[in-house]
Length: 120
Image (cartoon, rainbow, N blue to C red):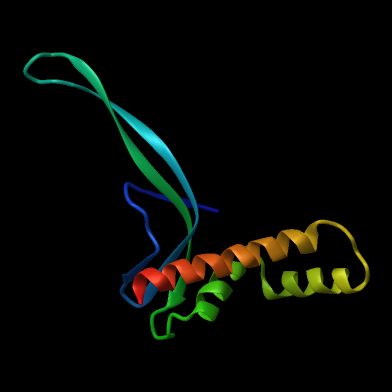
């Protein structure tokens, strides 16, 4: 999945008829070399950068916790895939498939609360 990089933290963007929700934050440092025009001295500046995965929500929908969580989960798992994971779990499958799905859904819930805390 494509990642989007910014020089500041992101939660949501409203563009036209869409609301873009950013999740899976990864922070790193970018170093930019440059030459001083007066002295000719070469230096480097370091800046924090933040990269995210992004999903979208129709702007007409109220941006609630449930809408954000569903959009994030659907960015990785289709409804059919989610149902298959649950069927396998109910049938006694002990693979990490359900655990991975559940961890991702819990992270989506946490991110939704962060987003709503910053935008409400």
